[in-house]
Length: 354
Ligand code: NAD
Ligand code: TYD
Image 1 (tube, rainbow, N blue to C red):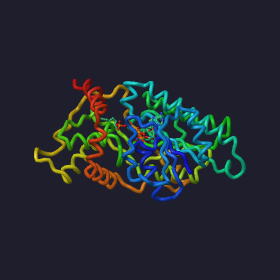
Image 2 (image 1 turned 30 degrees about the vertical axis):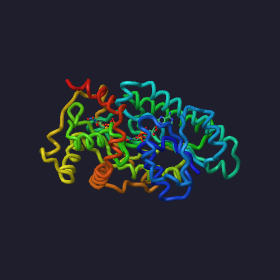
Image 3 (image 1 turned 90 degrees about the vertical axis):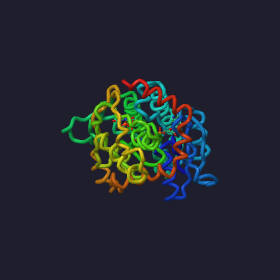
Image 4 (image 1 turned 180 degrees about the horizontal axis):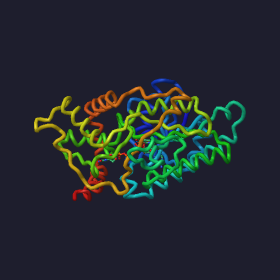
């Protein structure tokens, strides 16, 4: 079996669902169920013996040691993290704890377990660390996209904590020989994304007739990738990636935020027209994010050259699927918009009103 951390979150849940659609190899899913973790994402796996869920923290060494000893996973796929830049600005402590200390704890537990293995079991063991392109910092308009050789220049508490975790993973390979792989991926979108991130927030607000808050001038650029393509890339890297290597994963799809918001509005106008008028009327410029990175772009040639991976979805096909999913799953959105969600909206957007 494989051990997945953070498998009740957005990308982790998509990964677990895709994995069990394609294979019968069981998944041991360790997740602390923070505000971002949601077992509803995995509801279709209820009663499926191939999915073993453990409610626990990646900082809990005793628990992780016990899971390794009892389940003997052949690989770890490590998604668990605090993942939202705006939350990292309001409360960086949780980011250092989970992203840095949690990754350290998992690496130490994995090293302890791996050192007891022998022969084939030891040879095939893998630790795959899922990271972000944000560790590379921000690009100017004419800079080349991030290659794996780009120096790390993280600018937010989130990206700094992810950069720290990447460095730990690298060091555990070089120092202890732990068989690690790292992926650095661009912005994902798709089903089950928590509506605090740009695309699901815009869909949810537009459907509710609420303001669509665009930070700053709306010209910040992100490279968007459909989540299913990210999951496919992770499967390829896990199966055939070279040990100790990092692979950048991206959609070849750079777009300014304003264009993303207009695309969401236009698709909603088509699929769920609002009698009050075009959804774009709700676009509202609000105060910028402090330290807002201007542009991210990924050079994904290495993973294509070495592993033959390329995104299957274009932005046009992926965003249509995503909006269709949110339209069909408005109960899911309503459930995650709980009391704590409303507090977050008040905290993050209340102070941007000016
Ligand atoms: P998410 O916030 O939706 O999910 C994170 C999951 O981790 C949640 O289920 C949460 O309960 C769990 N978790 C948090 N702290 C934990 C802890 N201490 N112990 C155990 N579980 C814990 O995040 P996501 O968007 O699915 O991102 C997953 C991973 O992919 C992260 O490592 C993130 O840095 C990386 N990533 C995300 C994106 C993106 O666009 N979302 C892009 C590139 C890389
Ligand atoms: P986000 O989805 O938070 O991802 P990240 O910060 O990790 O790239 O934000 C994507 C972009 O959208 C980013 O440039 C910030 C911007 N943004 C807004 O303009 N308004 C919003 O309400 C949010 C959440 C993000």
